[in-house]
Image 1 (tube, rainbow, N blue to C red):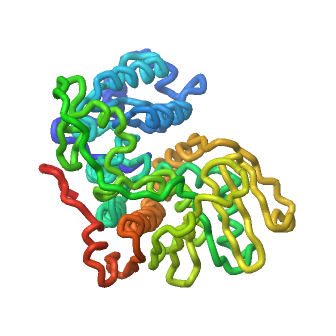
Image 2 (cartoon, rainbow, N blue to C red):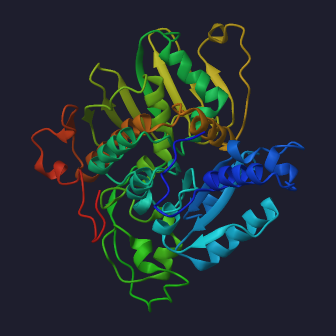
Image 3 (tube, helix red, strand yellow):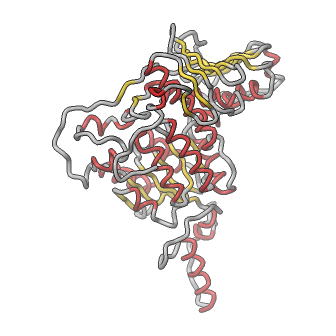
Length: 432
């Protein structure tokens, strides 16, 4: 079914065990009672068609993602890893109740989970300080990956992440679930296929445009590492003394090259990802201006503009995007609705309205690609270009002046200060 990690010497994979058991049974000609679920009867998915999934860092967002995975009949959720004991126990309870057994294993160290040869794919929903490096380690361990975003912390990590997914042949899906919602997909199709004329401007909503360095909170006594492992929580991020608030608020911790990425890298990367799709997932813009009057204007190599805009949107819900061409425009948001410059752009089509931003379709797209080895909508190449645009925009915000990116090297042209923000040192023993 999927590309598998080779079992370590002396260890038999789950599928290998099933095969050997069947062969031994046939040789002995002994009658065996086999549950109907193991044969795919009564509507059950047979083991050979199941995708065995492990979860790493399953908190608030991760719990929602997990619910989307468990809705899929071909998912077997086998293991949870989290640095917080309470979360490990909560996820195990959810998985065991869903599957009607006690089989979900718990780990405090993600390397033990990745060492399991029977796990096909991992859901990574840790804090952003871990997303990029953990994805690369999972890819090298032979796992396919569904990873929440932001997927990387800086430009250098983004490029290594992309190359690692290529080299390992990994099916990677970034948590940019709007790519699998019909009204956003239709809006991007209008732009990509020339229905709007030559695209001149694409607009993304950043939900704030600030970039700050990560700081320290006052030191507090370290917890028991079996209950809350501060060292593994920090991972590759710069060391700092323990503080319970930092550990609780991991969603906002260390987003982007020592810079707290704010709305551009977090919420805005959803919108930028859609804008990138609208311009055929081409390389990111080359010129980045700092914010002015609520807009941050960037420019692609072909002159098309990607504009981060905070205000002036048609009220269509959160995460709005707008694509403007020479002959028409379209705007969409999380309400599930579209506004078009002309009704003729629909060309008789009915676009399904799905409000909110459910991830169920995105998860299904990922699982299908795990089985077929296809390329999911939020693949590593697409995620790379969208994240590069966000990271470069953050550099312009932080420096308060224009910066220009060389697409041949992904370094800023004649700008030592900007290039120092392309990467960061990783804490021992972690390496890209």
